[in-house]
Length: 89
Image (cartoon, rainbow, N blue to C red; front, top):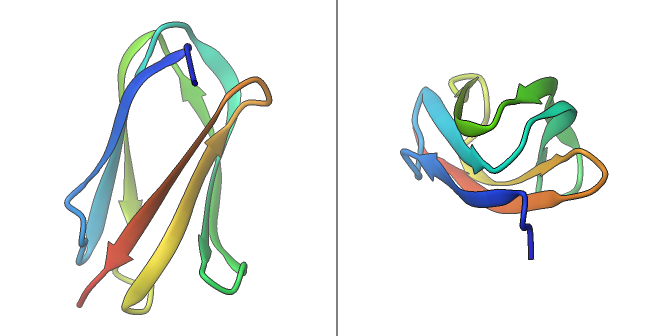
């Protein structure tokens, strides 16, 4: 269990042009990585993010992504979030 992360969500899901990834964190994590890959494992989006204690929101432009299912992974080494994102145009 991710004790550092209280809750997380991707909205809207399915997403059209933008998806917001919400993370509720117990503690700050400065050098987390947000990686979105397609189901074949190809990375389509990668960003370094700073997670602050409390609620965090990250907007992802999904307008350039093809319709389909993607895997969202956020990690800072000591915890990891894995979720699915569906893009539908």
